[in-house]
Image 1: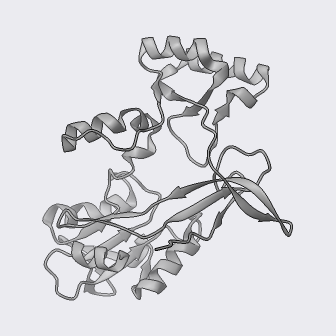
Image 2: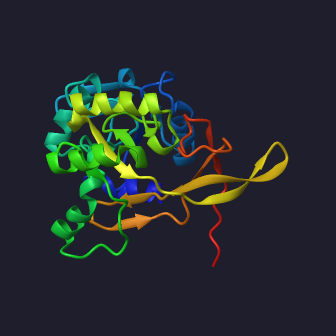
Length: 261
């Protein structure tokens, strides 16, 4: 499915030249980049392996049609952006994971998902979002401060569950420190009610134990506008007995995902 998506992105090439673009061994997901390139049967390249000649991006002298961008550089004014910008503007290169696709990494986007669905699709969302309070709005900030001890507060930026405070489980001193931080810069945070997410039998030290899980689906958007959804997805699991944050950087892991007919 990923291979078909990359092929479909090529700007008119019948046999497109595709590369997986990585930062190199220093990237935390470098092993995954190498695995993906091997599975796709395409070169794994770093910025230094590529050459910009006019409005064409070259690898070993051959024009590149599609770059599967897996770098941490998320801005055009970077080394990676300098390589890709001219070919992108000229239409000689397609980039999967184009610049701007990480906008939803800003957790403020969670507060407006339903509005985005209504605006762009003209439909009412079938699946409701977890209520997310934009603390940059004074009326929601006031509500959050009144209810802080019951909420989960997340910094808008960052990743890996870092900085997330589950106030019902936090020490009172930590909640008050958080209250001070929010008052100083309310627009840097969002707040949500505490959700008791699903648990699943998980092998821990040879025994089955309940652990919290979530499912991350993968959706590929193709040049035709078609959205292809992979069967199943990535089931992430929090390995700590009382852990509420399900993330690989917070003592988390992954479980097999079974799709049954």
